Length: 311
Image: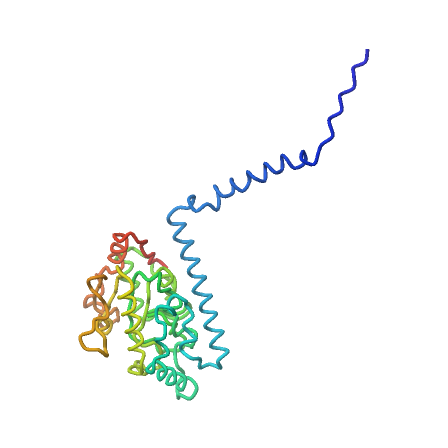
């Protein structure tokens, strides 16, 4: 007797068609998260690098925004328009509308439009230190004097120069101390933006300068503004590390315009002092100061992430 034909399978319903694929679709994202995108699966180093890259992207977004505002103004924008980082705009609310700041704005605009020499840095980089290091991320402060005054050098961060520009002697000495202190490889460029986005505020005392004329924009109002920046972070934050290299930076512990006014509250913050890293004074106390490792030791004791000083 021939075998009976197989019983035909029951017709599949719509639910049958979706049951197994749905199960696979639910499982796939879980596997993907555990292996690739879950924050808990990243090492501390990977998380730090991801955070730095995100902060760098935000800083460059601010840079583009400041540049677009500078271009729209015809090359001499109001200073207030160039401070685009929101946490700083809030912390310094109204400061750039004060009479001294408005006079400073007029001076810088006249210098750019009618002065005999170019003014550095270009407008969109004047507040690069603030736009690259949000107020709420500041952990350490390096104070410089005024911008580099050679063509293409100034970029709005103290001691920093854009990639492709010859490294100045002071910055070269900073890199030498870093190598001796932490074993960092001396980089091929002098762009310090990666320090800035990790929370190192690199602030010059004066933020603009004429080409080849150091201190040419001193005593025009910038000192009062940067005093206010320092006083604001001193009052509103705690546990910051101030790296003060040389007499000019160390003088910023006190207010220039008000007698007996201390800009930095030494009971709340940490101050590291040394000679300036310039070729004339680096051997008088900058070399061997170990400020970079000391900064990281302080930050780690406070429960904060250390600065990756390697560029």
